[in-house]
Length: 423
Image (cartoon, rainbow, N blue to C red):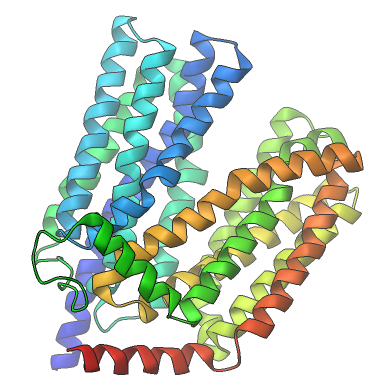
């Protein structure tokens, strides 16, 4: 009876978190379409348009680490509420400017930057809340559902809603975006309890411990963590190598496969379906095999998908293979997220997540740049996909060598012993 009660409470708390995540991801999806569309109405300067994308991405590079340290200090639920409330206010202000005809490209930049900073806090808080919310429940299942909320909200709903409503009335998507973030904040009021991390036992006992000291503590733990450090490297390599090709997807579809711009949207749709399938099947695969097997197999399947895309000239086969890649990479992300939750002490989770996302997200623009140079040198985006696929096989081989059989189980037991000794 007691176990059933704990599980029921965890299920309820997870539902509140997922409902908030669904609302915020819908807002994200709308905003990622509406802001570029708004920018195009204000300027046709390609540098300014490209700069908007960089501005939306920049906060992850600049603030992931300090945001992670902050989340190890404060109540994570409250941080998520404040971040979503801030996003609602900023987007609402943008809607007012659009309606009044007073918006400028620089106002769009400022709004994108502020929303991006709040997004770093909100998304990181949602991630580090998972272990506390799930309790005795399945971390694999919870991470799968969180991934599904992101895919549905941003790929299937947010993008189409954002573009359709902007075409009807330019202010409309920003109003919807603001309401979505507000709902995400309000829903979290139902998530009762305290979600402040347990104070670190290795850092100073003073509540005034400097941020720099706390970040150094996180780096020291990661340096000696063994498995977690290797997983960060693997995740960074997957991000870097796969972005070589992903950044060239539009050229692959339009220039190589000769698809129309409208037909290119099919790739995003198929990728979304593949991502949902990956989110659904990953927990089941972990149960019948192991996290290591899913991680290695998923990375290898990413290589199969991109290698196949580089070799085929068929739009149908290309789209299907891209769907396979999306399914595999989502399954890999779920395994990596669950491993992080199981292996990292709760009081350090924010900081380790900050390091993790700085590495993984920092690899994306580097991979995109290298992918562009590679396509220019090889003369075809298909050859870039082929190269990326072959390199992904190399990443899978590196993971096979660096992550020994049973490593997840052994390392988990080690971390638990260390934590008990510290207490």
